[in-house]
Length: 254
Picture 1: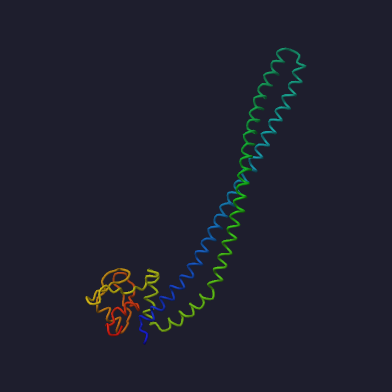
Picture 2: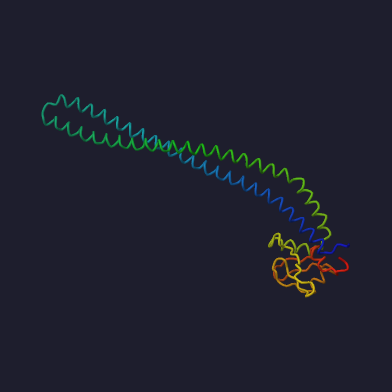
């Protein structure tokens, strides 16, 4: 049986679907790998921000502790001077100054205590981030292996299909192929639609995508000369499946 223009285009369509199926499996593996890498990047940002804040908080806590110790030293000096005060007035002056510095010391100690609490919290968060990063890195390794395995699995078959497509495409008229490529870019695996037989005797046929009626003249043309015919509703190129062809055969030929 001589292949018609529609038959050749259908073969291109079927090969393209097979190629898309294989590449779709690879793209799914690549998306999974990309998601692991994205989450690793987020964890890296969190870790960097956490470590920066931890460093700054430790420094602030150390400064507060240092200030508290400096004030304590100053208080001790005033106490020594107070013990040798020449008068009650001088003694009271030292006492008031000590009270002021004591209050400042307590404030610095409170600040240091709060900051050390924050240091402890940040240190705990850092450990959690490190653990999460290790776990995510493990998932990334698995994802990369899956991607590489999938790439290796489909490589030979993909090359075969591409070569097969080149051979078939050479037999399809340029204007027909250009239309198909444009429509496939819009409709994907619905770029071609089967004509479905509703009732042969009543000459009722529909497009397998739009489910709208296909004129009997169009079906007859597909049967006779097989020129590419486009469904005006879906934009897909119509074709007759083997099942549809058999359904339309006279009973004596079945």
